[in-house]
Length: 273
Ligand code: GLU
Image (cartoon, rainbow, N blue to C red; front, side):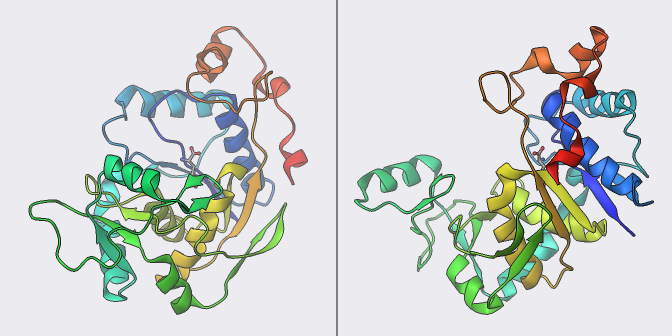
């Protein structure tokens, strides 16, 4: 059975881009007699607000995108991410990183050939071979991407729009898998939860295509099943900028108050496939 999910962060209101993403997931499930689930990606715990959790569900209901079951909250699932991290530690493919953001910036500025990925500079690997940790600092945990790649061997994933893609495990460098403040990260939590919710089709914006390379590596290392992917195009404003939380005028709440027909403002989800 097809199972999809919409995974908003309750750090702001839903806008048109979210409505589109939710509809892609919703329609794919409903058109195939499947299930459509909601998961709150709320590990950015200092930025989440109760009113956003509530508002998002109200908006989805108003949009006619009814979900199945109780929405999940990642903050309720930290012990599951911890277990996954321990497993990765036991495989020897993560390492503690004590760098502050500022230290990384300084290091990158001093390098003549700073490593770069599709989203900008990559972590320069400062802590990768660290022998003695600095005293009294909590570490973050990073994936040793090269070691992980050697362990998994070649991998691919299949995207409904982009076809079969060969995984490049080092595309985003040694990504953080567990932040020091919360013990997990987007990458680790999403992989654990997609498997736990038995998501068969992961639909999300194409800005996350790069992340899927890391997710396949993690799925393989954690022995989790491989979903199909659909990375849909992003909704942009009149100047071609992708919509963000600052686009308050395009929040679903404002459009609802103005009696707008939201679906008239958006392309049909089938044009994404
Ligand atoms: N929370 C992400 C977003 O709002 C979605 C991530 C995902 O679907 O994997 O864009």
